[in-house]
Amino acid sequence: LFQKYLQNEKVETIAHVAASLAHEVRNPLTAVMGFLKLIRNEAISKEKTNYYIDICVEEMKRTEVILSEYLSIAKPSTPIYEQMDLVPQLNSVIDIMTPYANMNNVALEVHNEGQQLYISANPNEIKQLLINFIKNAIEACSCISKGKVIIRMAPESRISAKITIHDNGVGLSNEQLERLGTIYFSTKSKGTGVGLTLSYQLIRSMNGAIHVRSTLGKGTEFVISLPLTN
Ligand code: ADP
Ligand code: MG
Image 1 (cartoon, rainbow, N blue to C red):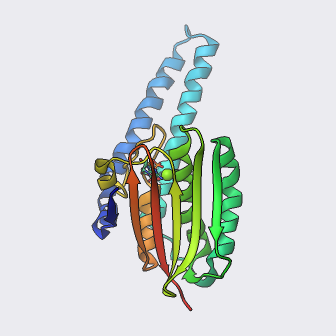
Image 2 (image 1 turned 120 degrees about the vertical axis):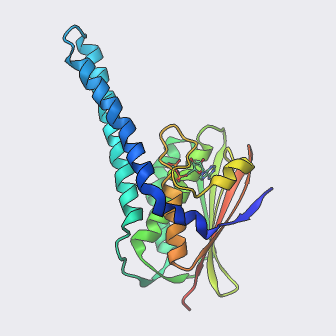
């Protein structure tokens, strides 16, 4: 078992992102260019042509995702903060994520003690944050049988709202844990490695904290604390 504090410096890497972004975008561009040249060759069958076109579309979609995620980090819109209860936000995120969990054969379980948890935040950011963590937890369980994601919400010493996202998925090695939150760190073939960096940044902007515990092959637990307003 390994526990570790989020270092603020990790988030600072965002400032150095421009060069790596250019690199990220150049790869799919090169791929698309190559396929377009192939398609131009008339000796190629209709089937092959369609196949190449599909690859191009996928590459372009991926580039679009990278760019829009990047923009949301580099240029965070000045969000309007409001007093809001976390519980209904979580419920709406669970509704959004349940089909995704079902598709991956992962059980989603929610526990909250029923009380309201008022924080000062932007509802869209909170939803985005919860979606990022829950989506990662589901994906971590997608390859195992009896995958389960448990989300808990409770007040902690009346000071903060504690959100726990626990999964029994693939877990992380100590090396991977070290890199967690670093931009573009992803172990997924179609991952972007942007979601967690963005989430960490959001937590920091809300004066929150995050802890992670993970065991390779056993699962991972993220604990997010956000200051309560009353
Ligand atoms: P992406 O999901 O696109 O890969 P993220 O920034 O959301 O990017 O996550 C970065 C990486 O952190 C993931 O690729 C994965 O290796 C690791 N990770 C995040 N959450 C979990 C989790 N619950 N279990 C195991 N690994 C995780
Ligand atoms: Mg993710």
